[in-house]
Amino acid sequence: MSNYRYLNTWVEGGVGVLQLNHPEKRNALGWELHDEIINALAAWAYDDEVASVLLIGSEEIFCAGWRLDVLNGITGEDQRRFTELATRLMTDLSNYRKPTVAGVAGVAPGYGMDLANMCDITIAAENAFFGSTQVKYGMNGFYGGLMRKAGPMRARRLFFTGDPIDAAEAYRIGLADEVVPVGGLIARSLEVAKQVAEMGSEMAVVLKEVALHATNMDHVAGIAYELRVTHDLTQRSLFHQRTPDGLSRLKKGESRATERVRHESDNVVKTG
Image (cartoon, rainbow, N blue to C red; front, side):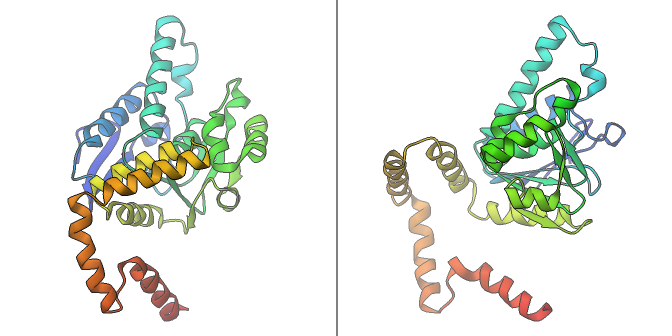
């Protein structure tokens, strides 16, 4: 565990866990939490023991957005420093060199939703609500992250109205990848983050780079770029270490590519 004031951190199964822990302020982000998340992300960016990062709150609350009590009345140099701090956090998270997962429970208004949207994957509890609520306080939300996940028309409606949506609707429009029962969010989010981390830190960095860059290329440039990445990966020792094992499993009818699908199908049969 960490020595941060409002943030619990630990590493488990290749996952660096960032747990927001300021319940008195509903995990809203003021000066301290901004700094602590930035520092924790930096500490794991080049740590080979960490292949993915999970951002969570509790089973009741994720993040209530910015600390309005900090923003209220802030002016001059303090306002500039706070804006720069928020810019760094959002940039560090959205461009993080390893895959990121957000686990969202309870209301995630404004900046809280924006934090989740900057992550690669979002898991939502059934009690989660998402909203670009800044407009209701005379501010703007982060349209870019919202649009990338929900598409331009739905994003604009959320952006212009500030009205929140529940977990089911967030899943339908792409703000959440999965919805889980209340009370099971942290366990499931950690499970998903561990599934991502199975590839190891080396592969995680390469694939996250592809996800960040290929999105902004035209389809021809994207194909060429991704094939160059494939060429590079097949020259690495990791490929030559894992391929013989994969071929051996194939001969036994135990393909690694489908093992999790088979396991989940078996569970459905047993519990259905």
